[in-house]
Amino acid sequence: MKYTAFCCYGNRISSLTKQEIKNPLSVLETIYTQRELKSFKENLWDLFSSIYRDQHWRKKGAAQLNRIYIDLIRLIDALWLIYTYHPQLCTPVQNNQGSIKTPGLMNNFNILFTCRRRNNKQAPRNTLKSFYKSRSLSAIKKNIYNYLQLALNASYMNSNKDGYFALPEYNVVDDFLKIEGLIAHGSSIYSNCSKQKPRTGKAVKFAKNLDHTTTLSKEEIVNPAYHVRNIYLQDLRFEQIYESIKIWEHSFYNKDFWGKTDNPGNILFFTECIKQLIDCTWLMTQTGELKAADEKKDISNSKRKQFVALNNQELNQPLLVISSFFEHKKMHEWKIQLDEWTEISLSQTAIPENKIKTSEDLNYLLKFVEASHLLTCL
Image (cartoon, rainbow, N blue to C red):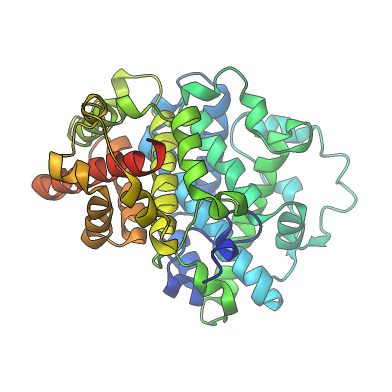
């Protein structure tokens, strides 16, 4: 397999299953039957407000903002498939922005531009073409991911919010206006084309319910061990992983957990790092790199104390721990599980269906993290 084909940059799907990629209109159906167009737009601007208003996420709830993000990413992926493989479905929409009111302060802001578009406000425009031609699909989604982290007050971003926007002149308002237009266009396509079944070609290989890397660049795919070491040098402190996962588990059941803290956005970054560890380690199992590392491993007694979850046998055979991890759940299932745990953690009501199984799964995850660190960083 040519693993670099799954580079996380460029135009690639990341949020849809195999069946959803085959029929992206089904994604639109799910979204627009659960969300009214007006409320969807209002929720978008709730996300915008939470970026700039301190602690505004408490008003709407961290889980609701996360849910908005998930639906936006799924919508953007589905509409990109339609735009790329079936452009005939992307009929230009009437430019009626002059008569549409955007919620809250944005309505006042938009009045400034009324005169400029008065003469051509009825001119049709192809929203999808202008949206997807401006940036790659991955760049669009990365920005929205950063918006969510900022809205949920991720602590590592607080010193320089603008530095995380991949936009010319940090034009966040314009980006949100474009996303709002995309939401409206998606609703129009769903209303007019719901009975059609477009084909989406080779994009199926990027389905989220298939095993492949989803978080790595080409350079990281070529040298995954180096990236793992960088994660521990720059993003995660290995000695705190055990405690962090235990605290995360506590948040599944203590529904006031994030209400007593200031930075729920941190959990998004944490789970993204874990996904990268899973991608890198899985890739090294496919190429045989881990097996070679396992044969050379010899740990001193002093270093053994760093590994809380692994017993002596597992410390001597860390590759078996990695194998057991991917036998317990497939690679893509682990990443989907991380997303589900994130939703549960941020929710004020949801809890895991089976507490014992959840604890067991988290124990597999802990052992996996320690074994991957042992094989790549010592």
